[in-house]
Image (tube, rainbow, N blue to C red; front, side, top):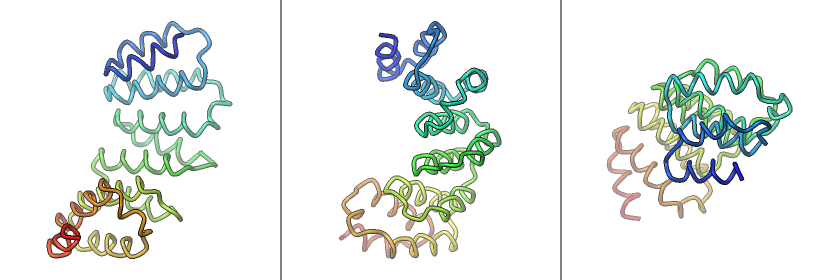
Length: 191
């Protein structure tokens, strides 16, 4: 029952109530922990950062193998501004998933480190559409010729099916224009 209330509070943009409810649960499941970290990420405050860290100390160690929870933890830490702690958890993880890469990359962009996001992207063998969107966002934030070169190299390797994703194309268009190649951006737009 608590699970549905936590989810409801989050869906209705009331992360504070979700966190208060979480504090009342004596033996939270993995799903409830995941929702709790999502609530902390939604707040993105120093108080939410403290709650995230305290909860991590109490969380059963077996839950650390759950990539969904780790992704939510990374997202919460990054959105609350503790990049170093997020990096330590990410680096200690032996089973890195594409969403974990994405959470770290988004966090780097949010914390004004697009170069680190790009460096992380280069480690992904087969990026998802979401990974590519975040990568293009990082390049757009850099606004350099080097970033433009990376965008063009990446587009050459991108599966054709990804061209059906309007969010990805918008992100690509933004990167091209912000990196100074409006002519390629116009061609993409017209296609």
